[in-house]
Structure formats: C-alpha cells, structure tokens
Length: 368
Image (cartoon, rainbow, N blue to C red):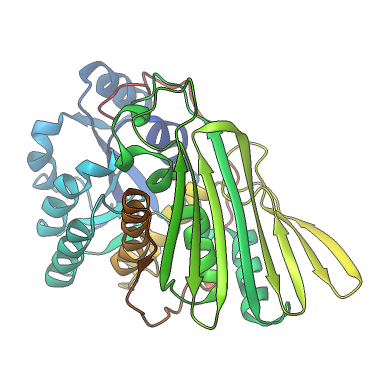
C-alpha cells in the first residue's frame, strides 16, 4: 500500500551517479512518489545519503529485510547491469514493483526470467526509458507516426562521450561498454520512429590507441528493418560529447540535438524540414527522472501496465546481444521478425521543473 498521503514509497538500490545525480533529487519533484530507503554496498555513502534525504539505509546483504519490512512499494534498481537480476527477481517475488535502469540485463535469459516473474506475481516491471515520458521526444515520435514526414526510410545517429579510464565501465568488457550503456538510446529511438523491429544487424568496432578500455570503445552499428529501411548509429567512450539523430522520410526530415541527454541546459530540440520550409522546435528543460517516476507511480496507483515493460527492455537487449555477436564474428546477424509494439503515447508525457542536485558522494566506486 502507498503512504498515508497516497504516494508510492521507493527504495533506491545502488548509490551511484545516476541515483544521486538524477533519480533521488527527481522523486522530490513529483506529487505521487517519495523516497523511503537506500540500498548500497558503501556504508559511509549509505549513511550520508540517508541523512541527506531523511531515509533509512540498508546494506546489500540486508536487501531481503528491506523487501519484507513493509516500508516500500517499489524499488529503483540502478546497479551495474550484470547485477540487475540479483535485485529485481527478489523484489518481484516479494510483491514489490520495480523500476529498472537500462539496459535491462546483460543477456536475454535474465530478461525472460524477470518478465516471467512479473507476469506470475503481478508485480509491475518498468524499464527506465525516461524519454518515453519526455514531452519533446513524444512530440517527435507522434509527428513521425502521423506521417508528417512521409514514410520513414533512413535513420542515422551519433552518441559519444569521453569516459575517464578510472571509471569502472572501462574495465568490465562489452557488458559495461558503450554499446549496452549508450546504444539503447539511438536503438530505442529508431524502433519507435520506424514502429518496427530490426531484422538484421551488422557492426564494426575499434579500440582507440592510447585508451586502455577492455572492449571496443567506438562502435558503428547498421540495422536493416522490414520494407528495406536502414538505420545506423555510432556510440563511443573515447570522443568529445555529442548527441544527435536524423530521420529522413519520403517527404521530409527531422534532425534532433540534444536528443538523449538530461539535466541542466538539456532541453530536447529538433529541426523539422518539410518541402521548402525548415523550422526549429525547442522544448524546455524538464526533470526526466521525475517524469518517468511519476508515470510509473501512476501505473501502480491505477493498476495499469507500464508501456516500457519487460518486453520493451528485452527487445533492445536482444539487439545488443546481436551486435556483440556481429563484432565477434565479423558477420551480419539475422534476427527473428517480431510484431510492432504500440510504443509510447502522448498521454505518458510528464513535465516537472529540474530538481536541484546536491553534491555527489563517491560516485566512482567500482561497485556502482
């Protein structure tokens, strides 16, 4: 049951940068959600954050005690992705709803295990595709779906950043590399814009000289979709920050930047080119984490299935797995055709002012 004032009570699992710098501050912007607990492997971090937010702190080994405490209705899981199943499955089994950071898992088997548990227990599972509740993103998707740019035929995207070599993501192989970490953004976007699933995957990766990263640090992916449509995106841990995508349809194009990021100064913006007219549309900065949390809490309170459910998460993970096989073998990977999903709808949009972020505490810890 929610709190006395009707708010869904969240426990945060993982005290890394995304929890501290985005999710935890964002919850306070909503009207239907509240923080109750934090689970982390760092005792000092746990105590300091618990004091800051006025919540209870738990160690990882005490997670089961939290699930049985009656203090939470849902958990937000933001551990490294190879630990997702470890914390998601017990929560679902305990009747606790789960908001899970992407990518959903490091393999398809874990995805299916989570989906089966959610279906069996009735606990809600939502993958944290924050852009599915971001007004500017939903506007682009809706305009493309409405046919304003004709039939969508070609998608290209670049999403890059320079990750410090001290960051744990650089030393844990492919599953912590740029494809699972950053790839879901352009991948999920093209799946929404094309309203279809890829049927063939190719990929080329490089390891930048002088960058001691334990996997391909820059990767270009090519996707073939039904009806002879093409998409391509490049992600990197070794280039200056950049984020953009271009969709070319039979009657026009959309060019968006910024389009994947969040935080101060990041308002979704795009240029729509139709016939001889070109117009730039800029949306205000919103708290995307508050938006996704409010949407998920609404789903819990109204007993509705969240749009970005486990099936949505698995569809991205299966493509990421195919990208890894393509990189390893040097050969294109054929994917089984899947029916299209309904995708995010305009009613999912939530608009909250950006929360003030407190000073971060030890976010480079390798466990989170």
